[in-house]
Image (cartoon, rainbow, N blue to C red; front, side):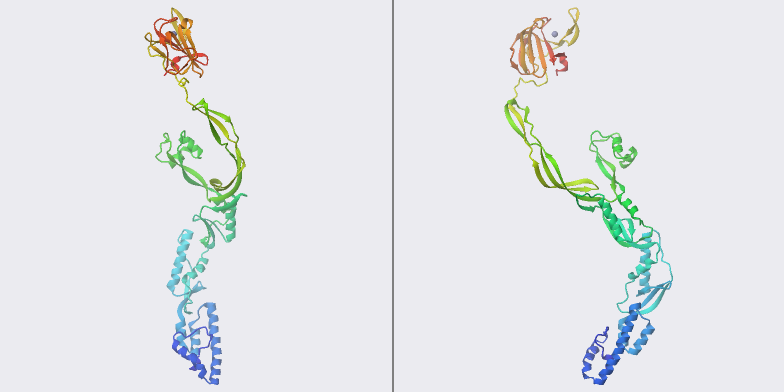
Length: 502
Ligand SMILES: [Zn+2]
């Protein structure tokens, strides 16, 4: 009994079922005779060897045959240790090939179903594992039965159409696979490199790019050149466009590489003949399959516009300006971080500005003097209101065909004749067939004549404002009846006054 109870120190297993006995046993050796101790020691050497042999076998198979086990149990005679340390299990083989140990047949069948379901998803058709499954009862060290899921790789290995590989995915979409993860990393680097310059300080994909190690159909793309072609190809995206003035449906279709019907298809319900400014249309947009965002650190020079200084000038009229000094633009060096997506700038952050040459100011004189009322407004008013008795151009008068230089406006004797616009009186007096005549130079290339007056109210050199009474109506000179003969000269030529009157 002593030997049995005397559990050797350093033994790998302890009789957990009898902790009280074990504790007691530890105290026993001190009371044993030297001979008994030696006997016990010899036995234990043998016991340890046996246990180690069992461990070696377990290391190979992770279980051992119950018959073998019972033989050991008989020798050792510690049934309590055996039943508490080992548990029933099954060694599974498919077509005679050992797969592993499972706790139950049900656990293995579940693993098979999971692998089949996964293979069905990967392959796109219902897949069933094939083979003759045999279960062999075995006892396995408690806690030593692996989860049935650890057998799944061995099951996947039996499926020729499925392989475990490094899979490249962009936004969840499989691009291809490779046995070598580095090949995929290099491929991604190549795509990124096409957008980088010597100024690029950072680069990243804006799409979700992942490399996973997973089971995938064996016919997945494995050619790196083909994968690169996919990554750099353009795909059709959609964008919107706001209709601008002058846009036509056909021009918009042409500009965006579409036919009219393609654009119509993108915009159901839109009247192609009635585009409205501000209307939003759907447009096709070509974007790379894989988008790359880069940030370039750049330095460049740009001009600085000359600052403008205004100088008030009381000799000039309000609203009038005159450049006194043109000034000159300066230059500055800009350092900026520019963000691009697929080579198109999306943001620019200026980090440093250094002025290289200062601009010199542009000086502009700005008038402050109130504009006098006699300055021509540029538009005429009627000198007098009345019936037009003779128009500008050819007419028959006094029995002969002649050219009429102005407009005859009939009115009563003594009616006020107004200046048609502001200006300077250049003639005021008798002038042959015109009779009492006033002429006004409006200072803008236009001169007006007012003839046949009974009296004049202005003199040469007078400044008159638009609407100022300059004479009284009469019938002096070559005239029949009281009227105002009104002429308009532009650039020295007679023009039809009706083209200038409101
Ligand atoms: Zn006339």
